[in-house]
Figure 1 (cartoon, one colour):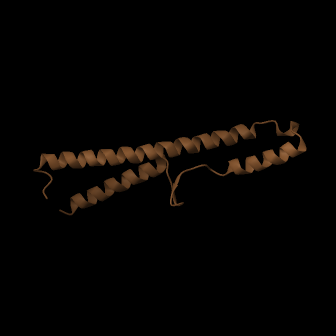
Figure 2: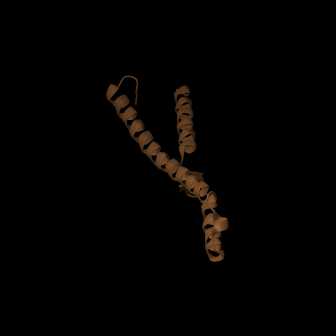
Figure 3: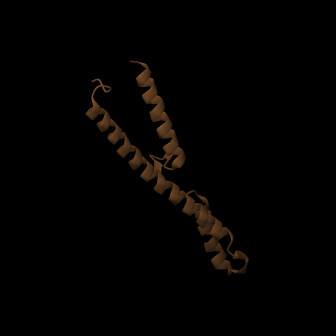
Length: 105
């Protein structure tokens, strides 16, 4: 199909791309927010006065601190974290692929 001559097909593709990009951006936004909040939680835990706690509370606090050290993130199949960096990677790859397809006409 020839896209250049068919305006409705062009509009359809632009609309489809916009919807897919906004959906991907929304997931990446929530992933970035979750990761940021996890980092803030770890920083808050590090600033607590743990030396004033009882020994049992220190043990519990140490366990919580060890768990909070692990990054909280959404990932795709455990491989690619869903954040703004992955959004940028997907958009750059999509653009490169589109330019490759466009150059092979």
